[in-house]
Every structure is written in structure tokens, then in C-alpha cells.
Length: 91
View 1: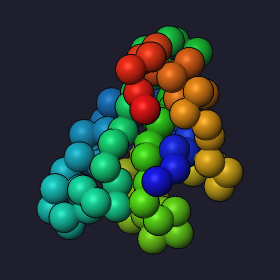
View 2 (view 1 turned 90 degrees about the horizontal axis):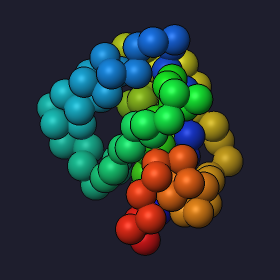
View 3 (view 1 turned 180 degrees about the vertical axis):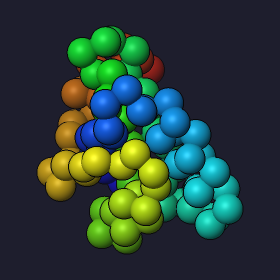
């Protein structure tokens, strides 16, 4: 599984995460989208770190979530995820 950087509309990250959580629950997408992290640094205020099992399949679901803006197609490294999230315990 790879990590990706998702961008939401300005100042709508919390609402996006709420709607995403509902969508994951309703559509049973826990295996496809196992983990999301909202970086705490203000520089990343409209970004979400998201772990995906299958990029193409997940993208179609993510695009339907309100306030979604963009999903970067290139995976990011675990080191980048650690740095952006401030969580050094991530594997």
C-alpha cells in the first residue's frame, strides 16, 4: 500500500474528512482506504495524507466526496508522511 497527498478545497479539510469517513463506512471501503492523516502544521491545512490499496479504484470514490480537489498521482514516501504528520511511529 502506498501513501498519497490529497488536496481539499480551501479551509474545508475537516468537512472533507467527515464526509470521507461517512463514505468509507457506508461503502465498506476500509480495505481500499485504510488510513488518513490530517497534518497538524498550518502549512498543510488543506492537505490530507491518505493510504490507498489501489490508486485508480480509490480515486473514483474520493472524487465523489464533497470538497475533494486533487489527488497527487505519484505516491509519497513513508519518510515524507512521517515528516508531514509529525508522527515518527509510522511504519
